[in-house]
Image (cartoon, rainbow, N blue to C red):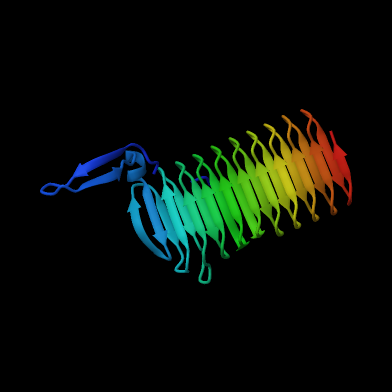
Length: 237
């Protein structure tokens, strides 16, 4: 995955010469001020430093890039609307498009977030070196752990969450699947079916719920593997 992904500080006052008017201003760190790009509905309105951005000329498309070498893209082709991409980490990349109503946020340094190929998808990468992909309809992928990866695609209303460091969550190929990897070095996979749930909450644990509907796999002990396949199956370790 390519991971090319203002903070308010103290307030100051400027006295305008010849008047008694005092304006309160928010001091912006030099790095954020130097690397900023804002594009709205197909028009780049601000571009400074190494931050880059673009948006399609569709209603509500907004791309904001803050941070060194950050990139934000909102919309891909005519007809895309109400997409929002925000890349605020250094070397971060956020893409929202190939559909409408998508939101991609990459705030971790060297992070990437893509919400695309459908409508109403949300991809959020807050961990350093984290990556998220949300594709389909109302899919959600969240990666908050360092080097975390979360993928939700090929379906509707599924959710993948990777909050552990070096964790992986995958909710693919069905509807209403839930994959949650909260343990460090953990893996949660809920795929190829509907209403599958995989939860890996312990260090180096693995949970897989797949190949059927209504499977549940819960790995709550370190270094264990839970596997639920076939339909209506529950496995715990």
